[in-house]
Length: 374
Image (cartoon, rainbow, N blue to C red; front, side, top):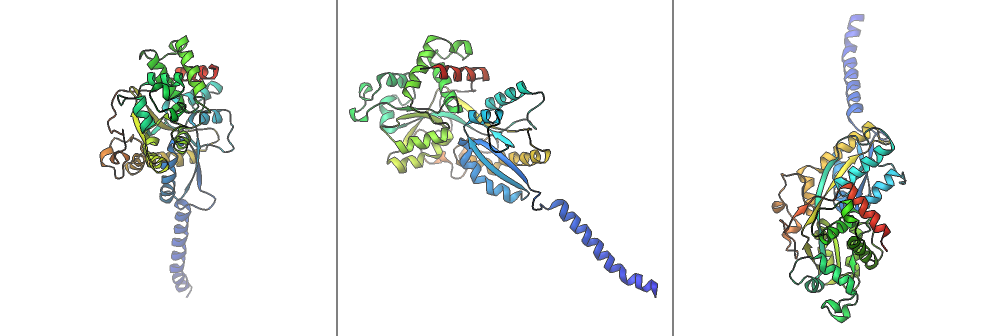
């Protein structure tokens, strides 16, 4: 009888064992409350719209990872991280260019030994610097249809539109850039302008230190009133202020394309895009930082970066005006691409040369000269 009793209990024990195994597997592979990884992503404001649109999709596909998105000007991002000025702990930093990531690495390594990032910084999306101008203003300022730094400088020196062929009631000439001490696009603008002033010669710290460049920076600084801290803020203000308060600006192509419809709705007549020759390509580049970031958090962050570079997400970046870093994505075949919307001046293949951004030493010198200008 005892043998029969033990045999009758075996199926129950088997079911219990199977249940324990299934529960164990569930504990191993299913996310549990309180065990999710939080990834704090600090990005330049130029990526705000596409990242916000992709956040829910990533969290749905990766239920064990919570994203927190923060947005700052690229230079602010570096300074805030170095000086520990944030009220949160970043996991990933995505400034507007790889050069700014290199600056971050160099500054951290100057303070401490060791590699500051978990993995090799990863390109996410790219864009180029362009000019935008309200149509009537652009026609007067650039009569040949091409952006010219010399014409902008002449307009600044004149101070008003009437003296350069515009209408008297257009008032003062107002050019807008971002704050070069806080934002990458402002730094790149000054770099291209200085290079033009120097006859196209490559920039160096020594080349920048001459009276012509000092005079140019002083003119720009006197003419630009309270430059915004980031490029997207700049363009939103440009659109809301409209002609007579903001006439010409330099911004990223991505933002200029994405907000073009908004300019048409707000001002009746949209702005025109002008490609610079040469222009500068900037590649938004992500770095997973080590300071106060666990290996688990870093692994979750890497999943997010790999997600962003896959074709479906790269197509989302294209829809927001960025150019893809994944070469399998074709601008001409992406649905709802801004390049298919006949935006004035927009071109898939920009005219002129595309050059790399200035190196770290030149960017540092540009900021120094701007701060000294008066």
